[in-house]
Structure formats: structure tokens, C-alpha cells
Length: 505
Image (cartoon, rainbow, N blue to C red; front, side, top):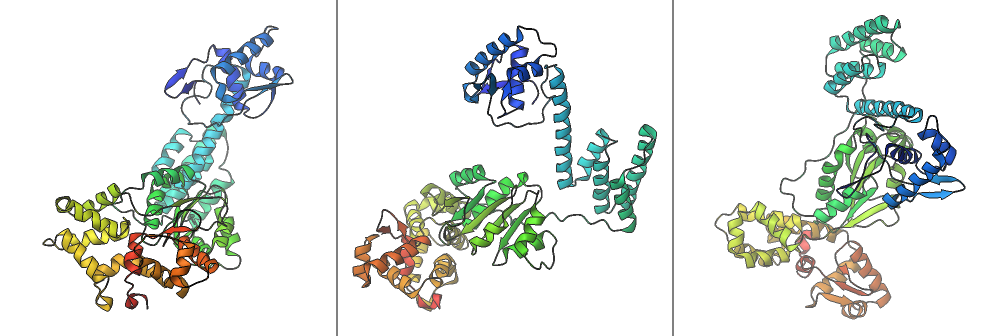
């Protein structure tokens, strides 16, 4: 808040004299509410003169001209302004505006700021921050009670009890009062050893030190939060890694905790994370009760039950979902589809794991290796790690082994299995019909096919073949182009064109 000022881009706008700025401030404080001439005059002037009506009209004309973005409208002798407002807690609100109305607003906003600050202190329960706040507002009982609990949590029972004695003495001397019920209750619980503090979960897995690329997707996800963000892509595309990376960047905005869940019992895992050891009954309803009024950041990896997720979301908390399949039936989700990295990003990741000089010495061969795995980050990391562990190998040797091992059946090496693991996992989830169609597609020379060609190639009915092709596109094993046409990524061709039965049994 502070002084009433405005900027357009980096240039400050001259808002005119004090009374004109006061008119603008009154409109902003009543955002979206129609104010009559008399109401506005009463807010801006304590003892208005007859000329105030004409001055108000002049100020309105100038405000419209200065700030057309504010959509200031006049109707029936009144004015309405709509704007998005926030208080960055800097400076005294409405500095320089001196009417009775603005004095009252200063008191109101100062109290709101104090309540917001104490709500944040309650979430964080940081002893040093609470001590500073208590020193500034020594007679406020709520933060003193929080400080007593935070000290007790840190094993400082004597210090917690001393806080009670200090505030009791201060209240007696300054106001002639005894501590209120909340302070007395916390004091009694500490004496009985019954203080139970809410658990603040911090479950995010560590991010990858060599995380590379995805700048556009990260920016889109951060802009979308706290709306639910969904990340979809084929196995091995780095969905979980991206979700965790975004969550670490956004976690400061969710002070009640960060939760990471995978598996079928999402509601049960969330409840256990906040201290409900053996949740029973309607777990979704119980979670909504626990999460009401709080700001959690929840990452659900590999979503399998979109209906269950819909039952768990609450206002204020943010969700990041990952899934091979895009769950279109789940409302209110901002979906991001990811595939391979860009050529430059893939090279950067390869060179972060492997000595850059070795990669640069065979830049053309490195490009072929990266193309073979469709620039997917997980296979790239495995291949670069394998080369790093074999200092006498060239990139050309690695490529030769990749092309040979895809045909070796049960003799395939563990490193190659790690590279192919995403496709092995995808293969196990296919029906026989889907697998047969994909194998036929992978053994063609062309990487683009239409429904008619696919039906002729596989011997199936065109209607049924289109359904199978769509199912394969839903799990990102083929890429839909236009209606009825699909493209096969090279990494998928490499696996299904030379499919190894021993890996998928």
C-alpha cells in the first residue's frame, strides 16, 4: 500500500494532487462496489464545500484519462471501478491522505496485516520469528501462546513456562488483567506434557542436480498454480522429475507442507502424512476436513483414479499430477504434455553427465545416439552414465552396442535394460491387439501412417484399428498428427521393431 502511486511498465504515472489520489484510493478500497457522489465526497473530504461535486467530476475525468485500464464506469450519479488488488505490506497505508475515512481504513488494514502475519507465524512456528514478533507486540496473547508451544516443541519447557510468567506480569502491570483462556490453556498443557503440534509434512523428493531444460513448461506450470497442474507424457519423459522440480520452486507459497504421494490409496497416504495414523471411514471427507483453510502443495505421481483426486482437492491447496494418460474427465486441470528434450537440451544433459570433451569429439555420433532415444531424459542419463564409467569407450562404440543389443534377447545387458525400461513398462500395459499393431507399424520403413494403411498392414477392421491407434496415442507411443494420421517416435520403433520377448514376460 504506502503512498498512492501507479506505474505503467517501468514508468511512474503522475496521479495528480492529493485529493485526486484520495478519490482513486477510495474507489480501489471499494473495488467492484458502486459509490455515489455523496459517498465519495464523504470519504475524501471531512468538511466538504459545495464545490466538491465539481471537483469530484474533474478528478474522475482525469483518472479515466490517466488509467484507462481500470475500467472506471459511471451510472446513476455513482462510480464503479474494478481492479485486482494486493497489499505488499510496505509502508503506512494511504500515506498522505488525511480524512477520517482513511484514518479508519489505516487502522483496519494494519489489523488485517497483523492477523495475516500471525497466521503465517502459526504455520511456520519458527522460534526466532515468534520472538521478534512478541518483542514488537508484547501484549498480544495469541503470538505469545504460539511462542510457548514452539519453545516446548524444541525441548525448551522451562523457557516456554517463563514466557507465561513474563506475559502474566506484563498484563498485570500494564492493564491490570490476568492472561486469557488460550494462554492459560497452553500453560496447563505444557505443565501436563500434553502439547501436540500439528505435523508439517515436507515429503518432496530431492530434485536432480543435473536437471536440464523444460523452461517453457516450468514457467507455464508456475503461472497456473494454485490451479491443478497435470503433466502427461510417455514413460521415461521425465514427468515425475519435472513435477518435483516445479514443486520445489513453488513450495514457499504453501506453508502448511508439501506432500508426495503415489499408489492407489491417495487419500490414506495424505491423511497419514498429516498425522492420522489409521484413517477409517470416508477418507476423502476426512482429508477435506484436515485441509480446510490450509495451503498444502500436493504432488500425486502416476494418477490412476481421477475421480478420487477430484474428491480430495480443496481451496487454497495446489496439486501437481503426473500421468501417462491425460485424464480429460478431471475438471479444472491445466495439462502440460512433455516428450523429448530439444536437441540443444538433450546435448546439454548428455554433456553434464559425460565429460563434454568426449561428447564434442564425436558430435555427429552423439546426435545419432540422442535421436535413437527420441531425446528422452531418462535414457540419455543412463547412456551418458554408462560412457562415463567406460573411459576407453567412444560414443561410436556405445552406438554400435545399442544397435546390437536391441536384437540380443535374454543376453541384453543391464545398462540397455535401463535404457529400454520405459518402453518395457509401457509394453506390459498393452493389449495383444495394441502390441501387434505397434509391432507392425515399427517394422515399416515410413514413420507416418494413416488408418487405412494400418488396417491393411495389420489385417484389421478400419474402425477397430482407429480405436487401437487412438489408444496408443493416449499413452504417447505414437503421436497424433491430423485426424487419422500418426507418427512413430524413433525410440518406440527401436524397441517394438526388434521387440525382445524375454523383457516383457
